[in-house]
Image 1 (tube, rainbow, N blue to C red):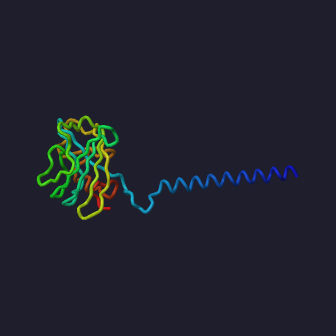
Image 2: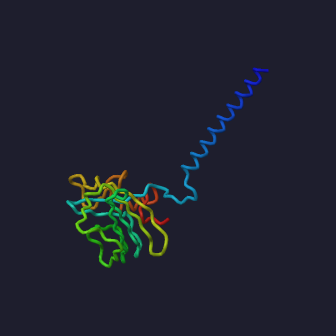
Length: 182
């Protein structure tokens, strides 16, 4: 009788362990999956390039006319600085300190802002016709191009130094831009 009880207890423990492992795996799959398919299919990138103290931001794909762009420097720190503007023209690249003509600035950079005091930048886009683009992160510590790099390349994170044409050609294949339609 005792051995039968031991077998039953061992079987119950085994079933509980298998059940917990299976439930844990299912939870892992659910948490890793993209509910509703709403997340980006590929990494979302934005390009940055520093020439002396001038920062140029390359979106990698032209954003539609009237898009609102929000740029946050040091987005998670106490020293967060934001720039929000709407461009009347289609926009693919810009300098935060020198925005394109016919730009409506909702939130301006503070006087004397030095982007080099920031280590990270986040760019997000809201389309004029409704809907949002994607959000892209950039490491500003890598914005200085190596010596001899051509002036039309920008640092696109894990993808390295690329031209806007190279990013546009890869858009939707292995990377996405903030202005890739959802």
